[in-house]
Length: 380
Ligand code: NAP
Ligand code: F7E
Image 1 (cartoon, helix red, strand yellow):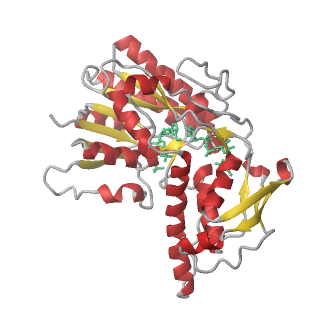
Image 2 (cartoon, rainbow, N blue to C red):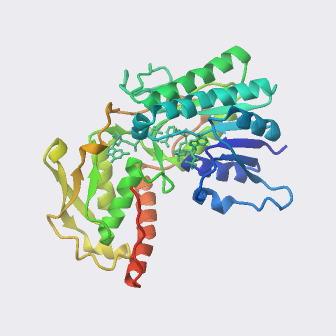
Image 3 (cartoon, rainbow, N blue to C red):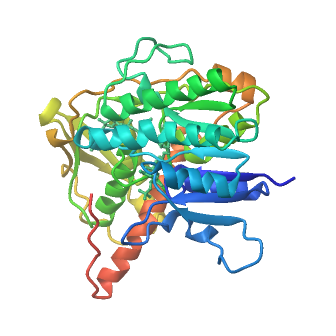
């Protein structure tokens, strides 16, 4: 029997990759999408099906995690075998500016879904995946972090997700529901939101190499993250819900890298060697070598603006966070042993995928410029 899944946050990075994965496995996929004044479905437009066709496999519903009646009605209509609760205000720095909304959507939103499933009498039918996060470890109490490491959240986002984590565990224990947390470490892709650090770097590096931007302004480039590819991570989400027993899993690569190193590798992939000098707010990154053969190989016609000694990276303390998470590195022992899950992408493969995609994106802008059209404004 083909299964039915409901994905909240279907328009996000993970929602798009997970929809593709489940559709490829024969699922009917229902997605919860927020109403917005502009189209916000870019990441899933290729999956769109005209609702007038017979037996559509990909169906969108307007909804919001802050509206329990809406969530209950949709869950009643869809009668899902699996719910993947991916919707969230997911930006850590923004959560300091919107703490109450973040608590409502990311914390209480999870309760609304669990309670809807319970009240609708679906506790034996519907399995629930909760998008938990390595941000729960915050000021880390153990290195590397595993399912047994105590939490110490460091942002309104992480505190809201901590409520969501424990309410998921509580509903599992209290009502015998299949409700599991995937504690996912950072995962990225060409579909990553533009203001998360990896995408900000790959976009800026591509624009700098193409001569469309002069300088990249960063916050704390000393922090360390365990970065994987979102395509691999949605497979782990699926596997978590295919288990006999509901339990929580860390999903990570087990490798950690500083933000500075991610920057260096991205520019190197594009043929630019960066040298970092100075400390804290005064640190800068300057061009110390240019690989002209590489630049040509990437189809970059004119690299003359890439002069040795040019500063292309500066620190802007505006991007510092009130409380930082300095070091994340996950222990993937349990997901390897019980799910048989291992990442297929290395960090270098991730950077190649993201930087190539952004280079192609902005090469289109360069063509427009040449033809006399203004370059679109991209809001960072
Ligand atoms: P994302 O790209 O920011 O996507 C978030 C999704 O949630 C978007 O579809 C967004 O809709 C939707 N959303 C936000 N607020 C909502 C609300 N009030 N009601 C309904 N939908 C709402 O995030 P992601 O990277 O795909 O991450 C997916 C989930 O995993 C999130 O819960 C995130 O916190 C968690 N997580 C992510 C990572 C990571 O490294 N990516 C790691 C651990 C956990 P719009 O498109 O309309 O904005
Ligand atoms: O920051 C530092 C920043 O915003 C990573 C979310 O998906 O993963 C994500 O949260 C690091 C931090 O991700 C800039 O201070 C420096 O130390 O890409 P990020 P995050 O905060 O780790 C977790 C697992 C989630 O669950 C979240 O939903 O990079 N950093 N300079 C910067 N970060 C940003 N965004 N912008 C900068 O200019």
